[in-house]
Length: 345
Picture (cartoon, rainbow, N blue to C red):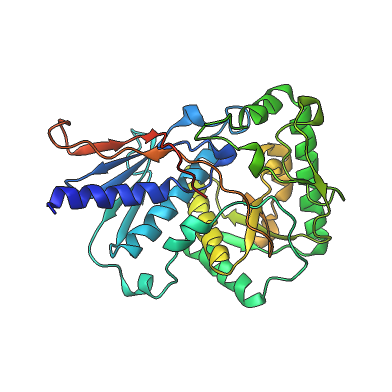
């Protein structure tokens, strides 16, 4: 096997894993370049894929890219490489969100952590009811440590705060359904048959018949999408992911922390669904914050628990890098392209 082939296979493995990350409406707003000469993966934003009204400041785009970055890091360690990460490395190129250089063997500290690679392929959002079984305190502590390692904080709200968070989420969902532009974006997020992006109808799951868990409906009854109803857990277990600041680099770190938490959850047999609606409205997002306890910038709200796995959602897959003879530079674009019959979690 030639060195170039080895590099290509390494780049392909990394990009395929990165592309399995979650993103708002499964819009996959990223593109990756593999520079063989420096063995560096460049993570670029593709804002044209992101929902404009729902994510006008591209915060969700950055969080999505940060989650893909976390997959790159976990895969590099699994393959015996130290991932050297730089966030926003070139201010004159704002769409270049991060670079990951593949250095020598991983540090001992990285090897002492759980191998998250296999969890990448089993992690998926679950929009199904969870059991009432509490998550053990030791697991919650491990999740908080995973978030901290990536520069974020993970807060477990008490009963009163949980009710407030769920109420804010329900208010945001109510607004989304009644805002023509945002409702249209939600409808557009539903995947058409054969599409490799968006949310397929089979992955939506039921709505909570008790009204306690305000999951995103994507389409209302008037739009012809029949939604089954089922009782969800009486007291949902919630986690609020926050950062101390609220800049682009913080959004990327929040995405890294989010995916780190989701992968650790998956290793423990737990499921998660993302309650993001209140974070899409500035006034409601502000009410999620708690400056007295350092929670100045809420970034994500998770519902976690034990229950059935969610359905897989499709992914765009990267094409193989161009050969040196096909490209004038070593920088080979791995652009998203459909792969027939391929479904990622």
